[in-house]
Image (tube, rainbow, N blue to C red; front, side, top):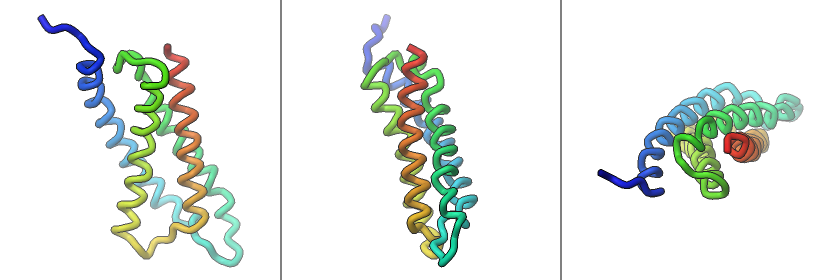
Length: 136
């Protein structure tokens, strides 16, 4: 008979996190290609003003998806769980952004891309913490 420890719970939860991280990374590829006109820094690019809204929606979806059933799956609560969730949500967004810029260097990042990624990060942080704390 094996005894449950927080480390064994974290090992089993890492498989759930890996699946969710992969799906968030695939979703961020879609966001990357959809948001190209919003990243362009032209003379009168009004679309760049809507980049934070796209990032906020993407961050909301990613954070909500990552935090869904997190308390039941991990057996953790509070700050350790929130830290794991926020890091696991932001790594695929920032990682795919960097990887796609290495693969496609001619695509713009600019101020619009920075606003999109920053809004996604901030909203994902808030959503992960709020949604997981509401499950406790």
